[in-house]
Amino acid sequence: MQDDLPNVFLIGPMGAGKSTIGRLLAAELHREFFDSDHEIQARCGADIPWIFDVEGEAGFREREQQVIGELTQYPRVVMATGGGAVMREANRRALRERGTVIYLYTTVEQQLKRTARDRNRPLLQRDDREEVLRTLFTRRDPLYRATADLVVRTDRRGPKAVVGEIVRRVSRQVDPLMSCKA
Ligand SMILES: Nc1ncnc2c1ncn2[C@@H]1O[C@H](COP(=O)(O)OP(=O)(O)OP(=O)(O)O)[C@@H](O)[C@H]1O
Ligand SMILES: O=C(O)C1=C[C@@H](O)[C@@H](O)[C@H](O)C1
Ligand SMILES: [Mg+2]
Image (cartoon, rainbow, N blue to C red; front, side):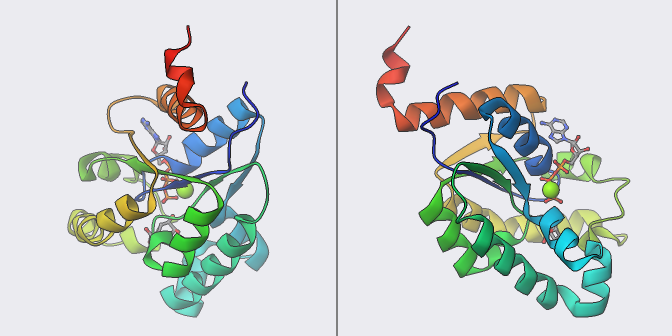
């Protein structure tokens, strides 16, 4: 596998597949994998619902900015971010300046299916989940697009096929002639 690729940062909404695809992509590229949500929980010694309960969403966003600010400085990593990471300008800037940013796009219908039984996403622990996801999509989709170098759909194919597309498209960005090679 080509070894001169930049850091790869995955952004997108809850259930887009950032954590799932990020882990597979890192294995494919022989890169270290970080997940900012996991890192926040490990450092805090508590899960995300607990942080939201005790510190509020604002407390969680502070922790998230700290973690993204640090992890984006590592070389040669793949990092999955949380769905709301793009809400802060400092995060958008760190991601854009320090790697290739990929927006994993999916539909609200897929998000609903993929997060149906989950209890670890505090923003979705309510009856009007569909409305919440649609509101977040309207607010955040322009920010995902403004931050990303590439948009990759995850609603029509499984994680392995998505990883294949990411590797092909990121490689092409690094070496545009690759698309002409056999
Ligand atoms: N391309 C895909 N096709 C089908 N299912 C998928 C795909 N990608 C992820 N999933 C499934 O969707 C669920 C949510 O995926 P994942 O946790 O990776 O999302 P996420 O983007 O990291 O969400 P969050 O922002 O909340 O951390 C998982 O059960 C995963 O197996
Ligand atoms: O979309 C969001 O705001 C969130 C997504 C998750 O990845 C977590 O970062 C947290 O549940 C908040
Ligand atoms: Mg995740």
